[in-house]
Length: 280
Image 1 (cartoon, rainbow, N blue to C red):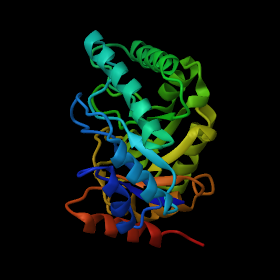
Image 2: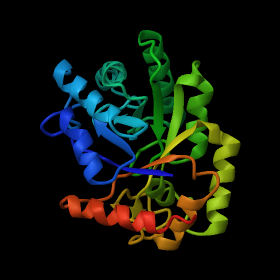
Image 3: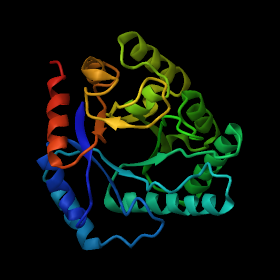
């Protein structure tokens, strides 16, 4: 398993690889712009070229870009849906320009609308985006904890989106360990982990799983409250993560940690812990 972190792009993309190497990352994830707004600046060609040159000197792979927080294809608001659609199109293009292979997207919140209607909106949005933007970037849907009116906390909901997307080869999944636990899947014990993987494979297919978000949970099983925590210090626990990182169906995957950080020392700690769990 290749471990890495979500890396800050503060000061430019040219600083990303240095920060990743400091954390001994073998894979990386980052935003392409400010994640808390709609506005963006065009990518700086020189900055991106330096990032690519720096990356080529390492064995860091694959590279993931994460969508900003505001887009919500499940929204019943036409204005928000249209802005989200435009944002997704832009991010697919930016991901290709950066040279990343994958773009990660939160599935969204249905708000006051029904589940099936929201799933249909998300699926239609993805189909429209793929029709407008034809590139090799794979869009990854991230499972959710189920907070509020989030959709995507059940594998059956993600399956419904896949069933309605026409170009399935351009679509995949990122499985967040904290979210899946908070959504009610008991991955903290062996029986629960095996059950979860069996259900995922049956409904979606393990071939669609491209990366793990490796996070412990500060909240209980089925809490539907999204609170990431340090590896082994939350409700999933050290033994839970030992089984996860050594599971034969996971071992080939990259794993991105989005654990809390006051400073870089928190990342160093989480990397040490997760590496100590790997069995030869």
